[in-house]
Amino acid sequence: MNRILSPIALIALLFTSACGAEKLPDPSAVESKSVLSELRDMRRAYERKDRGAVMTEVSDSYKDRQDLSTALSAIFSKYETVRLNIQYTKMVITIEEKGIARATFNWDGEWTAHGGNAQKDGGRVTMIFEAGSLKLLAIDGKNPFVPQPGETPGKQ
Image (tube, rainbow, N blue to C red; front, top):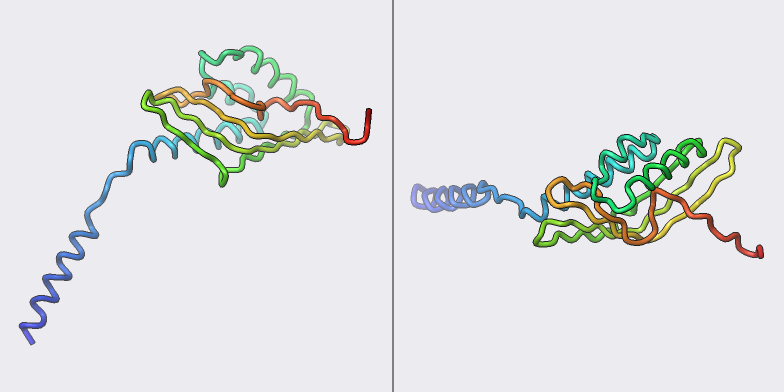
């Protein structure tokens, strides 16, 4: 009986020590998770219509920073509610060697005015984030924060 227990105990000890060793996550995985967190924070601030909180997440190097701030003020005063849906399941996040992160995803939004009139928009966009701070550096594609007037089908 002792002969059987010794090998079993040794195997169990080796198995628990191998399983117990924690592997540190890859740095790009940590960075990708931080990008997701940043996008969620920006979306929440946008839906609360908190221009200051949104702009805090935008880099000083953002090309049209002042124009974005002005557009947000106009949107938040015009619309009673704003909703932004980011499709996280179809998102591609890339981390460059320089540390710049890119998140490419589909989005859709709905902006409802005080009278109940709603405007919908959507598209695919790539958001580029600064290395380290993960502040929004650029938007390549349709800006999800600024709705574009759409064409109504059948009208000329």
